[in-house]
Length: 174
Image (cartoon, rainbow, N blue to C red; front, top):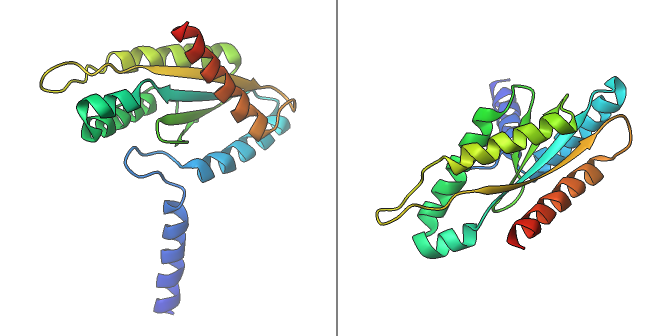
């Protein structure tokens, strides 16, 4: 009985860890897709809005090249921490790629998601990171998509926020 209990707890712990992104906290891509699916279903049932905010850390490759990967990792951790501090208890935070994060904001319409994204951009710009010689430029670009009712599927919601983030980055670079 003790061995079975240990194996069950070990399997549960492994399942939980398989959805957590180490280093910055938050869930990984697997957890993101599971949560999006659950929240889209809930949104369809309740009629509450659901927003997805894709966040890209600007210039991480340049930061790594100029200041080293240790500083780049610190930037990622500090950005993730700043984002998590702004989120509501009902929001969900994920690392979707090397320098990208996603927030799944429940009961959050487009205007509220825009406000949240603007707050996040301000928070990150105020991080004040630096190396011994100079400040490390830290900023993010965000893209938002919102689902109200049953108009979107989880994949479409995420793809739209990612497209909007890329479009915002292109507009800034023009």
